[in-house]
Image 1 (cartoon, each protein chain N blue to C red):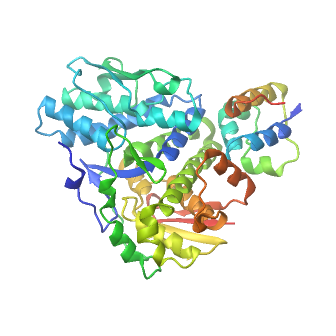
Image 2 (image 1 turned 180 degrees about the vertical axis):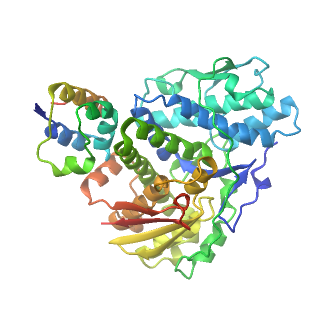
Image 3 (image 1 turned 90 degrees about the vertical axis):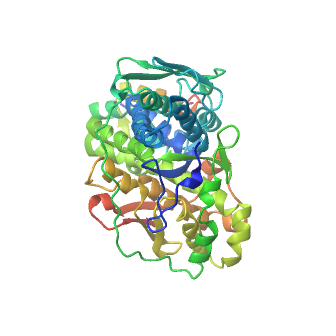
Length: 409
Length: 72
């Protein structure tokens, strides 16, 4: 029913869209870190946007993907994309006009939360509750605002299965206004200053289509679990979190929230880029072209430019300081679709990722083949070495032509 | 008044890289009530950080929750 190869990669904008939704990869380090950051603020009602954000993106996406399909075909489509995107497995056969009580034993969120943080006191798979609310709304022609979605059991809490209850009732998640269409910033790009950029990019173009859910709906790759997120779903989590922290504590709240969001990006950059740069694929197709540490960073940028996050490049690069750019980065495009312009840069994940990359290449022995794979190793490294600082200087949603960030010692 | 700097030093030894930010996030409403806008930068730079007993007790509780160990 669903075939990832039906959706061509936009090479001009380094962008991928499926059913009208921009799609990007994240790793389990980032997603769990992001969710934990949000849940740490116990005084905000975060479940409303943790569920609502997923419901909104999936409602839009499934409405497009299920156009003209029967009820059974639509259920199959929803099941297929859930699995393909790496969220686990769901069976919608019991869903009917009144909703469903769905159980599953395969959940990206529950599995990776427990892997990273141990047992949780409360259910953690808000995404799937939102996904199911959207599926119900699309398949049975209901309005999201009349649907209640909740998770009542969770494997991350020690239960045997995850249980989600979806029914008509008082809506328990946020509903958002319609989004704007994507607006690219078509400006000349400053290319990566590296003779082998095109070779590496060409070697990995299309590789994203091989990163699909396995038989249990997970995507193990590069030592992490990847998940293909609806970009607006995951970015709205950041934006709503920051908005709510601003309401609680003004600029102080925004600043603290931003620090924590950037740390989530840092962890993602560190583990995922580390995994990529010590993979057999890298060893075979990239390493022969690398002479300096700067080459490692340029090669990584050349590779990730095939993944749908935008076009990454560096305008200044040394151990002491780097200035990175991303043209049409996924965070700014998302913000503009959903909220319009911003007073401050909103690209915490990108910027944290660049910072993690600098730490990895210049402050660890990664380029000599030694990678830090464990949580304790990561913590020990962060405590022992002088860390890079990050300054987000430009963003498309702020009116600039590109994302720009300084990373320095 | 109690000094939370020793507790925060202990937290840094045993917690995540951003443990100070996480602690601050947990107790933010109480920090605001006490007119304190701490950041991880000024935690690092300060030798002592004096807070009211009630706030101290809350910070100890939340720090222990986050780290999963009892502060000694």
